[in-house]
Image (cartoon, rainbow, N blue to C red; front, side, top):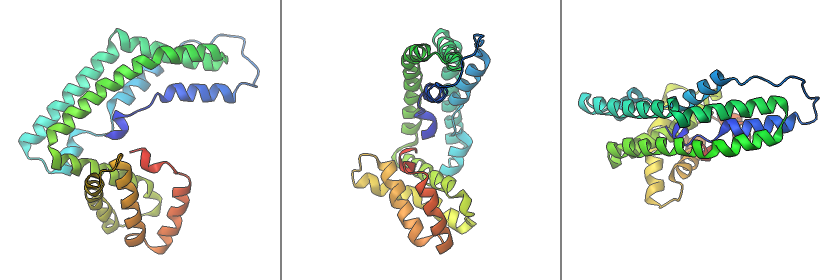
Length: 233
């Protein structure tokens, strides 16, 4: 869920990076057309989110009534995000992102900077709308279930990173069960970023007690290429 709620303006960063990498290449004669459809599809994909009510209900063991209320909360989220994207400000953001990529293709750095600057407040507005729904949904779970869910997200991030290690069922289960405990411990310790602290504590325990020696050795390479892994939850 966290990956959805805290998405960064990835299109802007990618556009700038692409432009700088292409700065020395020869220019094109024709102005590229605006690809509004691709820009809109990208924004809707970002707004769709990773977490779904069925997954949350399963992880938390919700009864039918609680699961139904959770589905209603997600439906309200989806409807409001859809209305924002379909509205004037969402359509403006879509056009700006299409302009941004067109400027990248034309290698016009000033136009990329302009579109990025104009798009930023609109993206901030959409992120705030999403964040408000996150707060509402997570608060509705209650403190214990919220820790259980956010701890599951910590463990899920670790399982995703460790997928190349081919963990067996018992190993994966141990990691999933260890996530909420690690998060609760980090919160009791007053960590400023409890999710990141929980990830690092869980990782230490998993390396020492769950992985085989060969898996532990292979995981060092994964860690080396994901130095900020604890901050992306």
